[in-house]
Image (cartoon, rainbow, N blue to C red; front, side, top):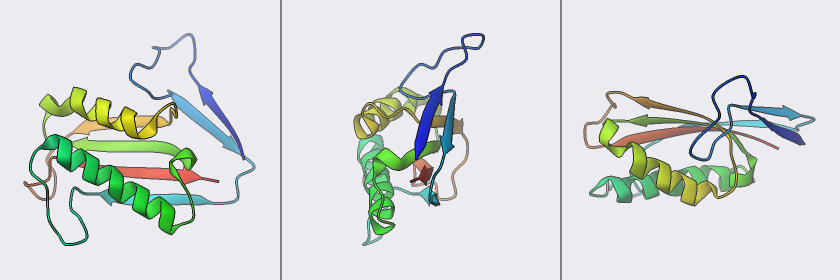
Length: 127
């Protein structure tokens, strides 16, 4: 698969570990991961934003592995935050998980289905 991160010089430059656009060519398949919530396989929701964010990325990772893929295949991330106060901590934990990978990204502050959840993350991956 050919992958190019695109950041037009005539538009704002990305800040915080993402690309303004990601182009993919010659891929075999796409994987669309539904919004992953901060709940483990026993339906336990951890306390606090950091623990919830880490659980969400564990869940994303589990879905990728179940599909025979890895985080290096991620091309787009959409994060839904229950509160704007978590923007910086979310970015730090996301960047820790993604490392140098810079997918296209959107972060939305909104109401979330379950009030116990502080975030939800959906992912698109390609290989």
